[in-house]
Length: 108
Image (cartoon, rainbow, N blue to C red; front, side):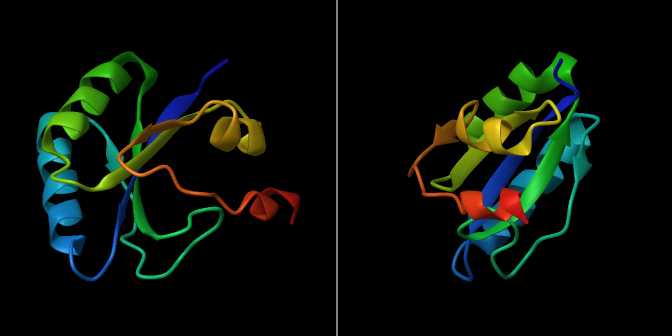
């Protein structure tokens, strides 16, 4: 069972404002939760990132919005089923560059 989806926007110091603007616009339109804008790598994520938590029933709409407005950002999304490793590795959806995740983060 899928509880919700996470959409992670990846950025660095040169494009963090693009990520902030995209998250802000998505939040205006959709009932999503926007997490912390990390300026360091967190968990399995190989770049700075922010997480958008998206209800299952609007995931397609939000992902489409992100796809059309990402302005070159790398985007990583996955379902949350309770199995973090499978969710991040086997069920991943990428836009832009496909990056290597730190899968070891799930064994700690």
